[in-house]
Every structure is written in C-alpha cells, then in structure tokens.
Length: 197
Image 1: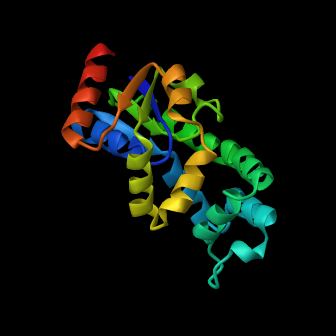
Image 2 (image 1 turned 90 degrees about the horizontal axis):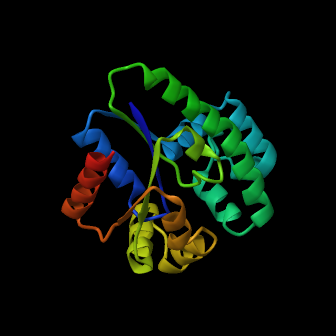
C-alpha cells in the first residue's frame, strides 16, 4: 500500500486527479479541504471553536454556522490571520488526515491518495511514499477557480498571487502532471505514474 500526496496550486486539478485515482484504481482518497469543511461544520469541534476565537462572531452566519466565503475573503487580504489559520489547520486537519491514513492502512487498498494544497507547509510529505504535483497555466487555473468558487477573475488572480507558483511544486515533487483540462490526458498521465510506482 502506497500513500500518494497530491498537491499543486489552486485550480490546477488536484481534486480531479484524486477522484480519478479513486475511480480507476484500488484506492482510498482523502481531500484535505473536505476534512476541514467537515470539522468546521461540527460546532462542537475544537477546530470550529478555535476559528471563531480567531475570526470573531462576524464570520458566523445567522444559524451559527461558519461563513466560509467570509473567512476566505479575510485570509486572502490579511497575511497574519492567514498564517494563524494555517497553523490551526495544520494542527487539526493534519491530525484528522493522519488518523484516516492509519485507519485505512491495513485495509486492502493499493493506494491512499491525499489531496493537500499545503502539503509541504503542513510537512505531510513525510507520510507520503510519493508526491504528485498537478500544475496548469495561469489562465486555466483562473478560469477553473472562477467557475468553482463563483468569483471574479480579479479575485481568483489575487488568490493565486499569494500561493506558491508552479515552479515551487515542480521542483519538490516526485512526479509532475501538466493539466491542460483534457481528462483523457490526465488519466493517461496518472496511468504512467502508477505504472512507474
């Protein structure tokens, strides 16, 4: 059983690749954003409480749930708060992911795929046998982010500017996939990597 870390900038296609891994191979897949979302939906979780402590009640909806869009708009403008949130996320979300990996290690999966945008910052490459970086051209990433998050190209561009660029991921990963949006090419690239592994 091999643990594959899937990382790259926003809008590059990490989630699509992880989905293909789960669909085409005997794999258990984990999405770090999904894990974080679940933790923030549980109002009794320590992660939720710490986030409210960090951001204040202004990031809560009327029903008491976390307004993720509001959180996003704050962290993309404020470096200090972004750092503080990353620290929280690394602690709680990474803990949860590590537990999920452990829980599934002795099952009959050939691979565990972990989609983690901040893989290196969270030091999660240490639990991975291989790291696959998914990168794409900026126009492609901007277009996907706009579609996914329903935001303007300007906001999408600002988000990308505060993230690591393609080169950062290319230099650090074991394998690199350049995703131009064609699913067949993505599947073929993944197949080639799996054959090498």
